[in-house]
Structures are given as structure tokens and as C-alpha cells.
Length: 335
Image (cartoon, rainbow, N blue to C red):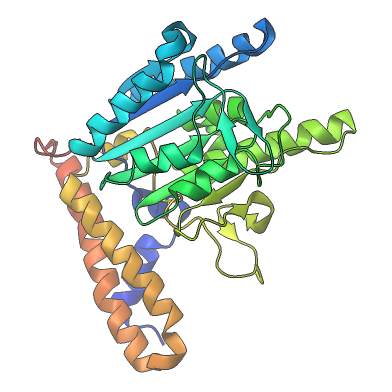
């Protein structure tokens, strides 16, 4: 039987709302948005709408943002290089790199179509090789998977509208993803007043799937998410809610992406950065303990679990005490 103290702690923690409180998204983030060549006026309107949604989300998150668009002309790639090199030398808490536009693939190399020279996965990987901070990469256009694979690694979450470079037709994934990432209620699967990367991914993938079904067309895009660094990626069909379906083949991505949001809820923002970091560490310990349950035995498992859950409960209780007393968090809270 679960010890009384652990039972009480588990009761406090075992809910969708509380799980989402274990997410973190420091506002000291930088959002770099590259809007590629439009091709036609119709695509230009769609891409502009996505850029506007990302800018609004960054503003709501208190994050800095920069857009490199068609107005850069032949210097678009040069400007993108400059921004990424700057962030490699002085990394923000988290860098969000978003590519909005068209992509191509000739069977050997993928390209993101800029208004000047195109960007390749090889060059993008080189530009971010020295970047040591957390990275969220979103390629919402066609032929994006080779870029996501090139950037895979520790502390990196990558999202691609396509599962391979061969998916070269126009993608519809980017618009609903951009719409969701700012905290769209319909995308908030666990009802915690904020939308994680995983939730935005699942929402957008579902919208895309529904569009193809309604049009009675064969889908030419299949989004993938990778956050374990293996460069393979997981499709949305693997999930039920924000959790992998029973029997889903391992490894399944999503653990990191479930914890990271661009726009935090008001309640989450009241926690200090150190509290958020400690919660993430403790949550990881809980997951590790679950995987070792049989190896540890019931008594040892519950003993160790109790210690972790009690500390987690104290963090949450501490937050509630501050709020009930009308106290505001320290200056580090939004960092």
C-alpha cells in the first residue's frame, strides 16, 4: 500500500492541471522567424498570417522576436546567419527557430526557399553546432524532416510538418500550429490554461488530418516531433491525449515537448525559475522510478517515490501559501 504521506502527495499531484504546472517556459527566450519566398500572392497571405501569430505569441510570452522576411531580398540567408551566430555566442534561455515557407528536395539535399540563396540542413546544422542552450525548431513547410534530423540532439525539440524530404507538396500544418502555440483553448488538451509544444503539434496534426479527410484526398504531409535526440521523430497518431497509446513502439518522443510552452499560464508565471527547474528534475525522477518499479520492489519503490512526491507537494504548497498571503514572486520569477 502507498504510504499515507505519499498518498496525500500523490493526490495533490495526480491531475492534468497539476501535471501542466510541471512545465516551464522561461520568458528570457528568443524567437527567430524566417519567412521564405512566397511563390504566389496566395501563399504570401498564408505565410504572413503565420508570422503574425508567432509574433503575437512571442509578445504574450514576454519573449524577444525577430522576423527575416522577403523584404530582406538577396540578404535573407546572410541575416539569418547573423542572428544564429549571435545567439550561439550569447545563448538565450531558449531559442525558438521557426521556418515558414516552401521547401524542396532533389533526392539528395533538402532546401528551404529564401528570397536569395536557399538554406540547407547542412548549413543550418553548422550554424547551430556551437549553440549550447535549449532549442525549439519548427519547420512548417514542405521537405522539412531533413532539417529536423540535422538539428536533433540533447536539449533540442524539433517539429517538422513532413516525415521525410520526399513530402514536397504545400503543407497545411503551419497555420494551425502557429494558431495553437499562443495558448488557443481548443489546443489545450489537459486544460491547464497553456499550450505545450506537444499539444500544439497534436492540434495541428489533427487539423491537417481532418482537412484531407473532408476533401477526400490522400494526405501528402505527416508531421513528426522529436525531443529525445535520435533524429527519428514520432507521429501524432501514436498519442492518446498527451500520452503515448498503450503498446506504442519505443522510444516515443514527447516527454520534453509536453513540459515546454511558449506562453505560460498566469499561475505558472508566479513560480520562480528555480522552482520550475527543481520541479522538472523531480518529475524526471518520478518517471525514472516508474521504469524501475519491478527492479526496486514495492517497498523500496514507494519509499523513494514518497520522498520525491513530498518535495513536489511542498513546492506546490509553497506556491499556494505565497498566493494566499498576497505575496508576489521574486525578480527571478520570469527569467
